[in-house]
Image: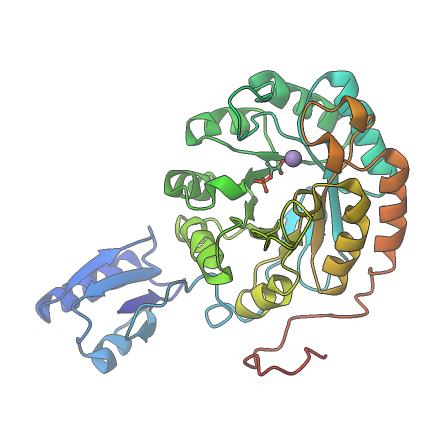
Length: 351
Ligand code: PEP
Ligand code: MN
């Protein structure tokens, strides 16, 4: 059972609900400081009485896998603002672009300039890289965060960068990183989800290549439950069948599905899905057409010299082409506004 308290409920009202649950023979666990959610065992308590207690917003007889991330809890689209850039809802898709990894000041600056020329409103770049091989370039670490902060201050573009380990969170906050990316490999790293939630910065939560949309939304729920409402979802490709020749398979359908089930902004990363720069632009366009609120794209000033993910990095000229194409999706010709709440019935999604 899930008891959802009103946002304006007081600590006293929350305590009274917990007392009442205990008096009924149940056990209550308050999951937020303000008591927005209380989970209760056993599940057969008196719903009507609990729903009528002061401060209670609603009672769900059986706890859903996610609630705060769902449209049932929050029917309107969430729009996240990052230094004046608005992401989500009816806003035109936002381009977040830059190199896979921060390699040097010169590389970051030149790649950032290429991204901005293409129309990027946020700069991406990893200082701590999660690599499959321990011998691959792992990122510059703190020196990378310092470079990101320096380039941000010089060019005036906010930063998206991956928080790979919970233990480094304080450093990310000290360098005032704007958006904390939680990578696909860490989608279910509950320590990171909880700590990042408590940090209160906008979060870009990548979908694990093996996760269902609902598992992804349950991961988002951990961040929301920790008190951080600023979560963006990022589809980056799922494990492809043997017949698919891209690195991962960008799950285009997951974009309208996530928008239908959740109010959170949905971003698409065509770069890691494609693994090859030739396919990044078509996948980015497909994602924008399907209603993505933003694109996270790897761009490198000189991809042949990249220390990480060079084959999928767009050249500056390709980035400009992408930017031009994306601008035609600014008025959302395919999907505008909140996705209706009707259940999927096999019909095409129309407005
Ligand atoms: C990245 O964005 O550079 C990255 C490592 O992505 P993912 O977590 O999707 O593999
Ligand atoms: Mn990468």
